[in-house]
Length: 179
Image 1 (spheres, helix red, strand yellow):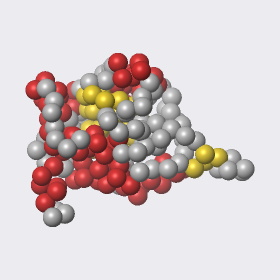
Image 2: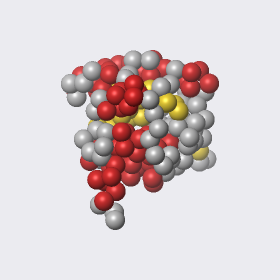
Image 3: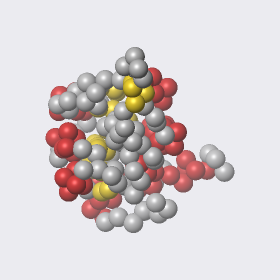
């Protein structure tokens, strides 16, 4: 994604965003689960996704993570990125969604959600901007306002962060910090 080419209706939805909620497996990771012989779980996160999350937070858009699974590696990664709103072990994600928007005093139309599987649909159908990763389940894509070009775990989160930054008019200012 080099430039933003979206409808005025979608642009208005994105301009209203104050929170991006992310699923973990299949979104922040490629969805594969690795376990050693002792049952210790390992996950792989993309550095560009993490940097995109930091940039988005710097622009004033909060980040939250809601995962159906619990993983120490997720807690450590989110802590290293300064992500405070981390909900793990929530197969029914509705309660976590209600909690985070209440804590931040937001309405659902101020929220974007990035998901990949049907477990994400209860939130995706409530938010102002629902996004599916490129390799999401077909039903999730059918309920998304937008789909990434990038696969989950391989930069899809960064793509969404950059989109929000561009539409909200903050991308060029962020880029100047690196030029």
